[in-house]
Amino acid sequence: MSKVLTQEEIIAKAVAEALAKQEEKTALRLQEQERQFELKQKQKLENKISLGCTVVEKSIIQGKPIIDKDTKQQKEVNGEPAFYPDKYTAKLSFRGGEIETPINKDNFELLDIGLDYLALGRLGEVKEFGASVIKPIFTQFIKI
Image 1 (cartoon, rainbow, N blue to C red):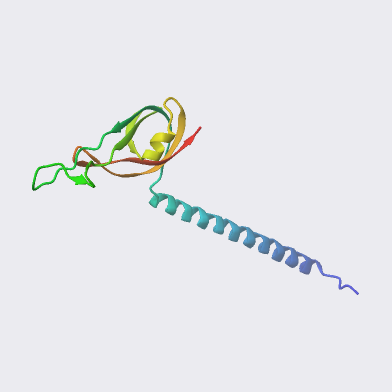
Image 2: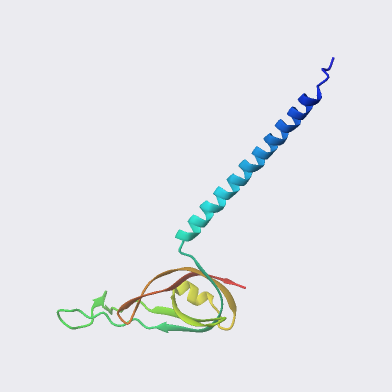
């Protein structure tokens, strides 16, 4: 036998169900806000750069000879003259300007002049003519 509910009991039950649904929705909204806040905090502390660009020019800067400070002679390794490693740069064009940036040898060989790439990297300290400057350091190029 089912019990017949009074009108007050029906209203109380409906109100309780509505409150439970409202509390569930509020809890879900609160969870989403917390997730968004954590994401914003993480993004605030991240050091990431992405740049849509076209490769305009690539260049190799030959490594200079390594000179011994005492003898003022070029050092030798296994009978061969020693040189500092070559440096590789790429000039990238993007909407609003151009930038010349150091890249590694693998990326230098990967990039083709005139093609579009999504350059990914970070801001970092780069030595320029003996001075330290903050510049983008791109570590990955995705052809687009």
